[in-house]
Length: 78
Picture 1: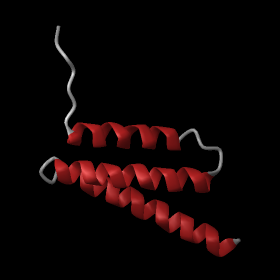
Picture 2: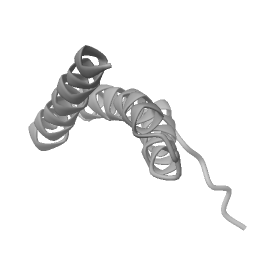
Picture 3: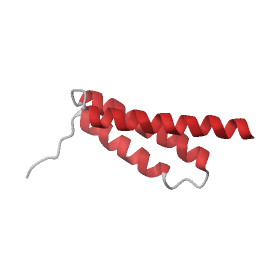
Picture 4: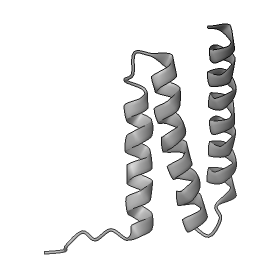
């Protein structure tokens, strides 16, 4: 019987995936964007831990930037 083992990098990746997935069940767009930023930040850490996987890092930094832009824009209109 094999025992499934996870290393620290795998755990960060799974947590990031779960947080991003959870963000999409939020009803409020502001909450969705905040939780999604947390998940994407974890994905950036995951990309760094994978010896700087640029596709993962660049994509998630861009998503965080977009989320922050719209969060700031929403705060200005209220």
